[in-house]
Image (cartoon, rainbow, N blue to C red):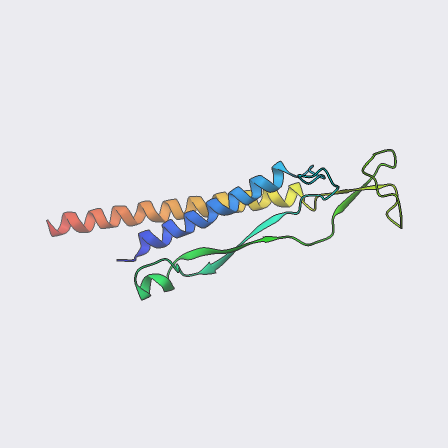
Length: 142
């Protein structure tokens, strides 16, 4: 049976994945070097949702709920900070003297985190309500 409880659970699962990506973005908002020590600023991650649950066992289940379709790496422009004395500053071209920084906007990330938390809470409330309705229905049948 794929019902309201499963739909709420899938909603909680995707919001948890979204919060993990947001946490990674905030944690890496100052990371400008890659694992080899080269200047390669961190790029923000964005979780993409899609309708349905491809892992469900029934056709009805595959059409309900939501799942993480992909985690996209934001290819947008890096942020730049003027600091010509920094050893990681760009040495040539029009960006000379600027240090590239991750394309993470902490304000946007905080707003996304608040939205994800509220969506998660809404799914928790929906799941709890579904459980209470099922319990009431079982009491009426007994």
